[in-house]
Amino acid sequence: MGASASAPLDDSKCAYIRGKTEATIKNFSPHYRRQYAVAFCRHVQEELEQHRHSQSRFLKTRPAGEAGTVLYEGELLHFSEDLKKWKDRYVVIRNDYTVDCFETKEAYQKGASPKYHVIPAGGKVLTSEEDYNLLSDKHFPDPVDFLKQTTYEVEAFLEAIQFFRQEKGHYGTWEMITGNEKEILSNLVMEELLPNLQTMILPKMKGKRNDRKRAWFGIVEETYGLVQQEVAEGLNTLKEECREFVKTLEGTIRSDMDQILSSKNFLAGKIKASVSEPAQKCCTENIQPFLASILEELMGPVSSGFTEVRALFDKEVNEIIQDFQKTNDMTRLKENVDQLMTLPFNSVKMEPCYLKVNLLQELLQDLKSRFKVYHIDFVIQRTQNFMQELMENAVYTFEQLFSPSHQADSAKVATTIEKVKLRVLKQYDYDSSTIRKMIFQEALVQITLPTMQKTLASTCKPIRAVHFC
Image (cartoon, rainbow, N blue to C red):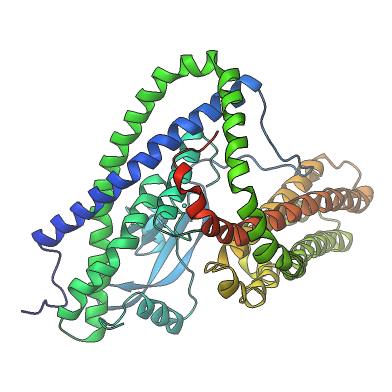
């Protein structure tokens, strides 16, 4: 018998999903236990050495806002499942990037609970129904067809994900490393689970295509919720086990750190000797000849993007100066400076900066075949994130150096603003150069490393369980 378009997951499918999730957690656990101990050892080493690798910058960084700070609010079209049509809804996005959807602005202002509360785990912003349909079709195939945290627990988790995927032959950047640990591990389960569910369920669904599509997305959402429940329980148990284990190791690690580092360096030398020849051969034949051309392709769009950010900041401050020279109004000046603080989040003004970097999508297409890199977006997204961050730092530094309320002599205000602007731009140039070098280095490594890892996989397999802090 065929399933109706609205049929939920039955008991057998729920049991199947739980079983698959438990199996994934079981297979993931050895990687996590190993990397947890490694990351903890590395953490203790850094603590003993009292050393942290930090990138110095001149521009000041705005302190993190209070939890719940609103980044955006406004009316958007939202598809109502109940009414089966698009309705205007009032959407609020906070600084943890959760999305609350209210019936009206008045409902939000009165403190009503949102009709929908969405915690994004990766996604795309679409500006037309056509784009939405194309994307939804992509994730509704016909039947025939994760972090800016630096704690050792986060490092252990991300490294474990990396080794778990490499064990299955997946090298390089994974686009679903987004969200918290529970969401990332759930994404890992869903990556393997969804194709199986598509095969099991889609051919048996009945009804109109749009109804089947809507029902399928409901099934995916229900599945993801079920997976998250299982993952949360399994991951919490695993983390508590690891925390208890490292407590028993901490005393030994601290007292024997010199011996541990000596042994690590000795073994690292032995491993380096065993992989040196094939690694050098791979680098010489498959990587080195292409580095210069890849770097050249990267430098143009990335540098143009940061130059555009600089020009935008310069232009906005110049407009503030010109406006004050016309009005000589200190109240209006303060309003203009306050408005400048929102510039990093002004998508209309920042879009030309981001578009400069989007050119990488076309320029780096040949990397997909040459280096088997399928997610060029990570280079673009990371660069755009840095561009926004640097603009945030620039306007915040400007605000710290220039305060309208402290300007006693209005005749000198325009000159003061100009001096502050030039100082901020000088600091921006230094930070921009530093960040671009880091972007280029990281991009070259992430683009070429999967080729090296895949080439050395057979050589390194006997020692794959050894990973050093």
